[in-house]
Length: 81
Image 1 (spheres, rainbow, N blue to C red):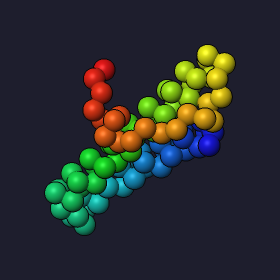
Image 2 (image 1 turned 30 degrees about the vertical axis):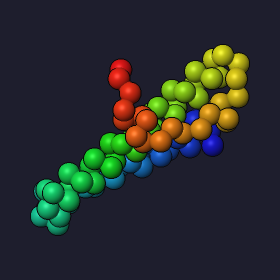
Image 3 (image 1 turned 90 degrees about the vertical axis):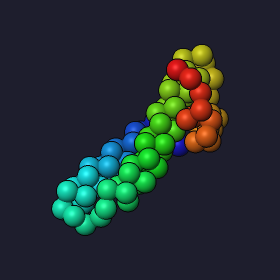
Image 4 (image 1 turned 180 degrees about the horizontal axis):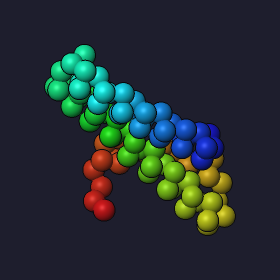
């Protein structure tokens, strides 16, 4: 996996978020469905951004970025900033 792969996934998730909002405005899905899916999208985005930051940090310390694994969603969502 490369940083470009992670950024590509982030862009896919953002595009999906936009499509989801369009679908709720068009009446194709309920707001409850939108909220459930948005929560999942936000968690996936947070996980991707966390991975990207950690890959960049590893690289800046001379460590191999490819060896940085993604953290579980619960861990990413649970730490304080």
